Length: 615
Image 1 (cartoon, rainbow, N blue to C red):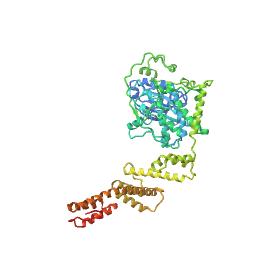
Image 2: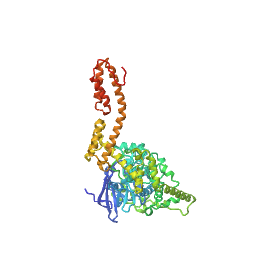
Image 3: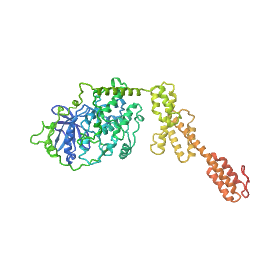
Image 4: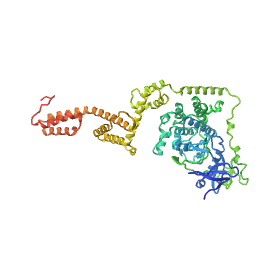
C-alpha cells in the first residue's frame, strides 16, 4: 500500500531507496516544515540488538548541532517500523553533481574541504567518527553551503561492541588503509577519506582504480597515490602537497586533525589572493584552540561513535557480524533529553529492545533545536588573547607569506628554463615528464616567441598518445568501429609488423605512397602519415643493425660450404640452397645470395677458388 503518513509527517513523495530502507519527503502537519523521513526496513528492526543500536544512534545524533551537518528533527515507530526525520536539504549531493558532468574549480574544492572540516571537527570533538565520507554523503544547498549527512553507518553496523574484530565498513574508493585492514579508525581516517573525495572532484577519477574490489583495496593499502596535478594540472602545488600528506598510508604521517587541515586550506586560499571569493578565516584559529589537538587525532574513538544513514549501493565493503548482544548494565540513567516526552508509566530503565518498543510504539518523539548540543558554547572566544595565541598568529602569517611566495606563478623565463632542463635530450619520455609545465607555459604565455617550439612538443605528446591507442587496438583492448580508412590501414600495417616485419614495412611504405605528398601533421591523415614514417624509419634502422651481424654469419656459412665442396659436394649444395631459401627475399643479403646461386651453377668435383680465399 502507498504510504501516506509517518508520525506527524504527511508523505508527499519518495526521495530514494537503499539497503536499510526508504527515504521519503514529508511535511509536518502542524508546522508545515519539510523533512527527509527515513523508514528503516522491517527486517532490520527484527535483528537482535538492532533497536538498541537505533536508540544509541539517536543519542549520538543529539550531540551534533552544526550548520554544516544535517540536523535531526525527531524519531519514532509506526506499525513496527522505526523511522526518524532529518533536515531536508534543498540541493543535490556531490555525487549527483559529478554524474551531471560538473567540473569543479580547485577553489570550489578547497572551500568544500574547509566547510567539511568544520563539520568533522564538530563531530570529532564529540568522539564521533563518520567512517564513510564520499560524494554521496556531502550535500550542497541552493546557496552552495556544504551539509554532511549519514552519520549512521558506524552506529548501526560498525559499533566495536557489537561487531566482530576485523569487520570492514565503508566505500572502497574512499576508504583509509587502516579501515580496509579492519584496524581501529580515528579522526585521521575521516581525513584520508575527505582527501580521496577532494581528489575525485578535481581529477574526475578515484585515487585508486581497479577491475575488482580486492584490487582497489590492495592499492589503497600498498600503492602510492598518483600526484594530483597529473590529472588536474590547474591545481596549485600546495593543494597537491596537502592531499598527498592526507593520503599517507600510516595515520601518524597525515595532518593531525580537521582543524589543522582547515587552516592549511584557508591559508592557501588567502595566499592566492582570491579577493571577494576568499573564504573568511576561522577566527578560532587565532584563539589558540588548535595548537593542542594532538590527543584528538591520535586517540581511538569511544565505542559509542557515529550516527545515521544508508549504506551506498555500489562498491561497498560490508562484513558486519553481529555478536549475541550482552545485556547492558542494569538501570542506567534515562537520557536527559527524552524526559519531557516519556510516558511515566514506562520509564526507560534499561536500554533494550523491549524498553525501546515501549517508548516508541505508535509515537513520535520530537527533538527541539534547544535540546541539541550547543556546539558554539565550546567554540566561544576568550576575552583576552594570550602570548601563545599571538605567537600562533605570527606563525600562521609567516606560513601564509611563505605559501604565497612559493605559489606565485613563475615568470616565462623561469618556467621555460625548467622545461628546457627536463627536455634536454628532446626524447619523448622527457617531453612527457614536462607535459604539465609545457601546458602551463602555453596557457600563461601564448604570445611568447618560444611557444613555437613548445607547440611542437605538444604535438609530440599528442602523437605519442595516439600511438598508444593504436597499440591497444592491435592488442584487442579497444574497438576499431570508429576508425577512418587511413587509420585502419595504419592499424593493419603495424599488426603485420608484429608478425611479419618485412610485410609490415611494405604496408607502411604503401600507406605513405598512397596518401603522400602530405607534410603537415594536422588531422587524422597527417598524424597517421607521421606515425607511419616514424615507424618505418625505426624498423629500417633496426633491420640495418641486425643485418650486419646476420650478414657476417651468412658469409661464414658460405665459406664453410666452399670448403666442403671437394669432400662433401652434396652437403655444400644443400648449404647453398638453404642460404637462398632463408635470405633470398632480404635486400641486405642480395650479394651473399648471388654468391650462393653462382656456386650452385659451377661444377663441384674439384675445389673452387673464391675471391678473398686461398686454395
